[in-house]
Amino acid sequence: MDRPRYARRVARQTDSSLKEVLESFPGVISFAGGLPDEQVFPVEQIAAVVDEIAHAPVAWQYLPTEGHPALREAIAGYMAELGVEAGVDNVLITQGSQQALDLVAKALVDPGDRVLMEAPGYLGAIGAAQNYEAELYDVPVGAGGIDLDRLADAPKGAKYLYTVSTFHNPAGCSIPRDHRPRILEIAASKEIYVVEDGAYRELCYDGQPEPPIKSFDQEGRVIYLGSFSKALVPGVRVGWIVADREIIRTLALLKQATDLATNTLGQLFVLRWLERYGLRPPVDLYRQKRDRALAALEQAMPPGVSWNRPRGGFFLWLELPRGLDAGEMLRHARRNGVTYVPGAAFRGPRNALRFSFSQVPLEEIEPGVQRLARTIREHL
Ligand SMILES: Cc1ncc(COP(=O)(O)O)c(C=O)c1O
Image (cartoon, rainbow, N blue to C red; front, side, top):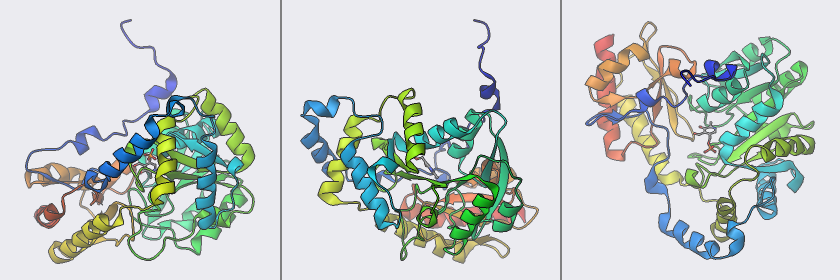
């Protein structure tokens, strides 16, 4: 065919891979990439656990669409530790939490339906909603997470609110404890679901993360998404949804026609890993990187630049003096040997940027920050 005859939704889709922005250039220090650092992957232990499970034929058989029953039970137990009451029937295992985002949008969004989306927001959640032709309504995110007044002002009639409640991607913030029940009240007044994404929750560097919004939920309003990608390894592609039983049943029905079931080896691996080692999120190296980044920023940044101090996750959010445009500054930054993702790429303000400390080698953080500070100074 001369021209592909795509469905309408394809035209609405924006490329969320940020290929160009995430491209690496020789000699350029990158605060752009948001993947885990492979150094923290315990590959020898992983290989040993895989070897233990891979010789049994069941490791290569289909599993139920809802997931391995014992893994569902383990996740229900883990959620109980977070204050979320959940039985096995409240858990659906997914192919990473990205599939959970797809299934939720598939189940809830008809073309033209409104979805309340954080701005700046996680591109994978934006893309999932756009795949089903949602109309996005932006709710601003600041240092204290999603803006409650702006949320309360959002129009009624949306299907759900999406939020990364803890250690936000891209903004690094967390919703304070006392805002969490308030979000539920607002959601109830608007009769919408809350899709709470806990992808970074386990990567906590100081104290304890706030309890999930789901832990305050008495009426099945919150659809909670979890993932082993950051707490263990992303290549395993295992995530989960905890929600009302009826919702889980519906999502499982949709999943049947999506992939039949999540990959068996991945689920068996996670199960055996949890039995053997428990969840041991790799926090030490990331904490060190965050601290080094904060110290370097403190030292190098000119007045008028501000940033947050994330207690976990992979990202810092840097705000430049008003009038500066992080997108326009990017080419110059690269010439100075440093790169990042402009805030506008996440539907955030033009004078902000995402500074990711997860992948950059420890020893490159200080020189990278100095290059960034020089670039900003040259633009002031
Ligand atoms: C906020 C957020 N949610 C979900 C995901 C998807 O992760 P996965 O599908 O690996 O669980 C990511 C990936 O980076 C993310 O940043």
